[in-house]
Length: 349
Image (cartoon, rainbow, N blue to C red; front, side):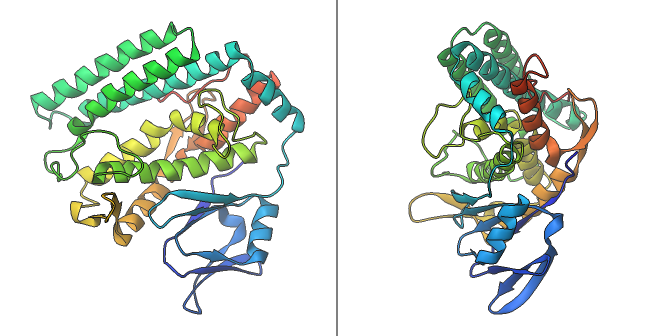
C-alpha cells in the first residue's frame, strides 16, 4: 500500500533545485536554504521562476516523483513525469470504456452524484459545527441550499444523457455557490470575502482566488495519482476530451473539491488565518494572493492532507492526502473488472 508522503512547494522566485546525493537541495542566491530526502517526497510544485537541474528531473522521473510547474499566481504550465509503469492492458480497456456512451454516462453520473452529495454535506455540516453560534438567516440559507442540492441528487439519478448530467451539475453548482456567503463566520472579514459569482480565469475576488488556488493543488495530486496507478490522466468520462486537458484527473477531482478544498478555504477565512489585505488586484483586474498568504495556504493544505478519516468504501483508516491515490486505484479495479462499478468518494459527514 502506498504511504502518504510530502509535497515540496517552492514559491521563492529565483530558486534552483538540484540533486545532492539522495536529497533535493533548494538553492537561493547561490546558498542552500533547504535539503529534503527524496524518499520522503511524493511531488514537487514550482511556482514562477523556479528551475530544476537535469539530474534532479531525471531522478524524479525514475522514482515517480511528479514535478509541476505553475505560474507565480498558480496557473498550471507543465508537468514532468517518467515512463508510465502501469499495465498497458488497463489503459487500453480505459480507452474502450471511455468510448462507450452508456459506460461514460454511468461513471459520470456516479462522480457528479458524489460531488453534489459532498457539497450538500458541507452545507449541512456547517450548521451542525456552528453548535448554535449562527444566526437564523444563515441557517436558513444553508438549509435551503442543502434542500436544493438534495433535489439535484434525485434528478441526477434519473439523468439519461451525458449532457443532462453536465447540465444538472451546473445547476447544482449554482445552488452550492449561492450558499457560500452563509459559510462565512460573522466574525471573519465577511464583506471582503463575499462571494458574488464563480470567476476562474482570472479570479476576480479573494474567495475565487483562494478556491482556484486550492483546486490547482488538488488537481496536481489527483493527476499524479492517476499516472502512478497506470491510468491515462487525459482520458475521462465526464469531462470532454481536449489535447492537453487532464480529463480523468478533472473527473476524479470533482468528488474531492468540496471536502478537501472548499472546507479548507472557509476554515482559513473563519479562523482568520488569512486576511483580505493578503490579496492584491493586478493590472488586468485579476485578484491574487501575496507571498505570505500563499505560504499560509500551502502550509494549511499540507496539514489538511495529514488529517485522517475512514474511507467510506474501503472502510479503512487513511489520510486526506491518500484519497486521490485510493480513488485512482479503485478506478483501476473497476476497469480491470475486479468490482462491478466505480465507487466515488462519498463523504459521510
